[in-house]
Amino acid sequence: MSEERSTVMLVDDDEVHLNAGKNILKNLYNVFPIPSGKKLFDMLEKVMPDLILLDVEMPDVDGYEVIKKLKTSSKTADIPVIFLTAHIDPGHELEGLSLGAVDYIYKPFSPILLIRRIENHIFIAQQKKELKHKNEALQTTALEKTVQVVDMENAILNTIAELLEFRTELNTGHITRIQKYLRMMIDRLISEKIYTDTLSQWNLAFLVPAAQLHDVGKIMVNETILNKPGLYTEEEFELVKHHAEWGAKIIESMENQITGHSFLHHAKIMAASHHEKWDGSGYPKGLKEEAIPLQGRLMAIADVYDALISKLPYKEALPAEDAKKIIIAGRATHFDPVLVEVFEALSDQFEYIARTTSRGADPEAPPA
Image 1 (cartoon, rainbow, N blue to C red):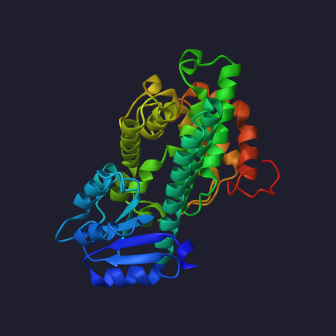
Image 2 (image 1 turned 135 degrees about the vertical axis):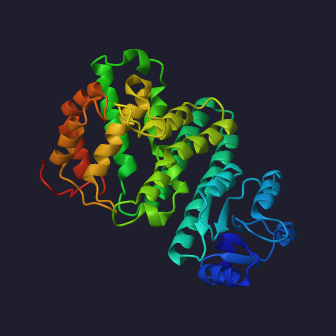
Image 3 (image 1 turned 180 degrees about the vertical axis):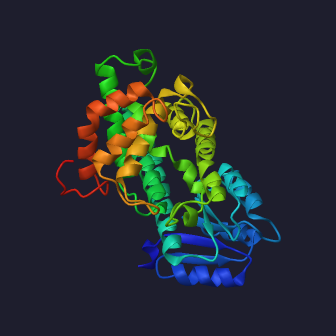
């Protein structure tokens, strides 16, 4: 029934795009096509949507000014806004995300992608509402409230991570696997009393969940590049490399709104440093040896191993034994040599995770 549908407002001064978007969405949502930012605010006096699709470039008031105004009102601040644009410009995308947009979609629309993005962001917004309601309902029971908050935060993080995985179509299960790899390596470090001084300063309960955001900066990279079936050009690779810096900036923006959260602290460090290399040849800062934070050194092994055993748009999956050899060969060049020893001791368990968690490899294959 129509009253059970979510409501989407589509704001664009281009009548062709308004009609195209309405035709794509009309069977799934209550769609309000709106030709300008001014008329959007007139409509918001009568109807509150579940999500707004907002064109960046409009003649009267552009999308950036519209979202600034939306975020200043308590009535509209929490409505997820997806920017629409016909131009690929990472700088403008970062500006939009900093202003509070949840995503960018490029025109002309891909119907499947448009629908999937809307579904994901409405789901995230609904979970945020549930989180708020549960917080209010559980104020009298502090312990129960804490448990619910943590569970809901993890649910939201999982949804964001799944959205990022969807953008790289073939690598499903990546987030789950790297969290398992990290947990094993950290447990080994603790049991062997390795890097004890550093680990003792961490809130370990938040470290593994923080891994879900290590590639959040890829939301700034166009899907055509992410899913390119072949090697990147030099220009494309330079663009992809920026995802480490973009990810750190996005998480820093979250930190500015949610103070004192350990998982954001760990997430920002992982996002910024997981492509640094032990010999200083990595990016974005060319950090060397222990100047690279331990979180980034751990993530480097987990992330590279999982990329090797996964089928990606530009490569086939490697057998676990070959992936193991590559990690070991990267000792003291790509990877922290101490952590490579830890990886060697755990390599059979890594291989088991690769086989049994989503699409790391064939779940029915025997151990390598």
